[in-house]
Image (cartoon, rainbow, N blue to C red):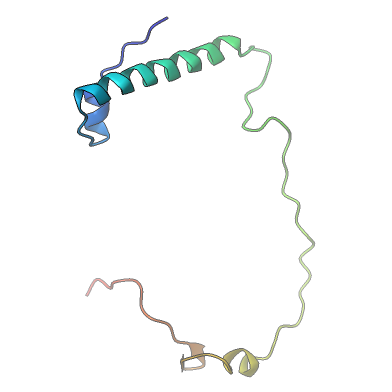
Length: 97
């Protein structure tokens, strides 16, 4: 079942300028992709729930056990620059002022 694609519209949405050869090639490729997607939809059974993964997944986390950390002075001793007891780093975000 061939699928008609308005490749000019798709290219405009993607902000692409395509040559005639590229349009022909992409039209064919996108048509094949949509045909395969349609076949997958035909195979899917109504009694099978939709899933994102083929096997069940769960997060495996270690227990959250608080432990003592290094003293503040030890953490700051190798800081290249410090200000008011904190690491000083280069600003990477512009301010609105």
